[in-house]
Image (cartoon, rainbow, N blue to C red; front, side, top):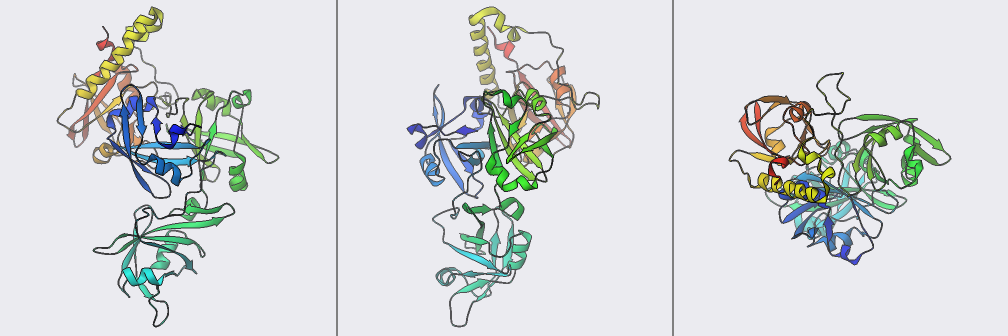
Length: 477
């Protein structure tokens, strides 16, 4: 999560939070890709300033101007691995913005049209004359990359204007798009088959709003954010923004279901008072469990049927380390993962003054450097041990070697093995986290916050990951 502040620097560059860089900085290339819900992808250069942070620079100004970013806006960055981010943009009312109606690449030829009775769409004469041929199949592609074959027919005799007919009704039906929807058709490929990227828009009282493949997902943008302010009211309840209530208030029942990235599902009572709606019962317990305090932000996405998914950000604008739960047995399922390891020197730094604290800060850095310099020949990924956080496997690694809920083995330097399972990091990401069984591995190997692990594939069927541990305490002077 990143706030846009009233500073001229934001018009030229945007700083990535230091906490994020400490965890994922070694994965980032010189150019990162930002993917926005409107389908556009922006390749933006990273400027890495020694001791002064990492910034999005080249093309950031164009990005900012295109989406009219200004003081009070917030951007929610979701790292997908391999230097790719998904970005959701919020306006000053805490709601997701209405994205501009444009083609994904302004240099590509495009035209706008409406569906007629869900059976066909007209094509402008100029576009048809340049790029289309009568009865020659072309393909329509939605924002998820799925394609449908369609054909063109003449609109009237002796006219170069055409319409998309054969196959178009199937496209409209399978994307749940109704009559009157406005489309932008963008030419993204000419050979061997012409491909048109289709972005659909729906008229609302606030103007045009981007539609995705499914109308229920597209008709309205369903994200809202919530800041935690220094007010005692937040300890007992939290108010849902009025703009969101205006759109979806009638759909909400008396109880909301909140799903967190750690897999927990919380049921909270919805209290309706006048035109306001509050999350009340269990909110205080929820806030205490996730240590939500002043300066934190919550990003809610409405899934329909009074169900929300939520991502929690701390005061540094980085997603929190969710509390570890032990999934080994039913009795242990809701207990925190507690190690039996005695307090090490690294864990008692506060009692020895600033000198010792500084010494262990250097130890953390040296452990990270050592882990980054270790490059096994086999496929691998690195992960920092963070309080309450499961190890993160980037999407490019996860796609090749991991599957959700399929057991794999973690092996330490002594050859001992632990069975674990993985789960997707987010619903819209291929990245995964090692979850079930990890608590036992964490405990038995005496891992501490700040340690670094390198997970290396040493066997593929079934998958066995050798874990090389770089302990912070081993790098203390």
